[in-house]
Image 1 (cartoon, rainbow, N blue to C red):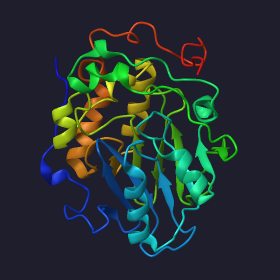
Image 2: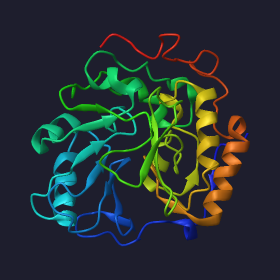
Image 3: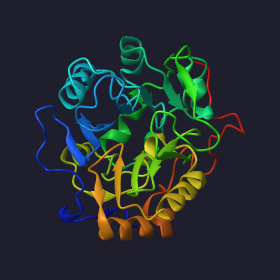
Image 4: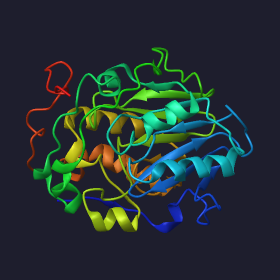
Length: 297
């Protein structure tokens, strides 16, 4: 059974040389920084100044707050705060310092309506599933936090029309499966796609692969994906956009024809490539409709 689609280094989308702030530029106004095994994305031109940029996702809880702040200061100007923090979803590795940064920067937090319970303190995520296999990251998944954060006072729900108020020119796309309210962000003018964890470009179940970042196209991280039918449909929607470049929550940004070919292969052969043979959510997904997506905090 195939488990990944290898990609050559020629498909790398980011500048191999990082800036002094640790970021890698992808386009003139999109850069990312790797924080441990997860990425955060900075949207806005260099020197944008106070309220002139947006942070997408908010890293891990341990040690990433100063890294994000230092990168923002170097890229946008000393003391430059974002106009908003925008979330692909609320898993622990995407909201680690969300509460602290949102309060310090006094900014709104945008997310999908179905992620609200994980962001207002009212519900926890379903339990991770170590039975999916693939390596140490999966085996350790029962230790990962599932409890919600609480940014209810700052939380804003993404508009139903698909617009992203702090990111003109971008639209959000509901891409559930990894979580019920997972979203991706697409800019049609240059076909740039911020994916979150709808699919990833490293074998995230493996600690070795997560550390080395060898470029491969994978489905969403298996140990936290709760609805495989929805995840398949989400990848098919994203492949249908024919993006020029993709920035995922885990792994390197990729671009060009080789990336698109691999993404289409993932969409076409999703069950063989991405879905585990066994797992808690393979036969019985956790959805908002059946109530299994939310637990008491």
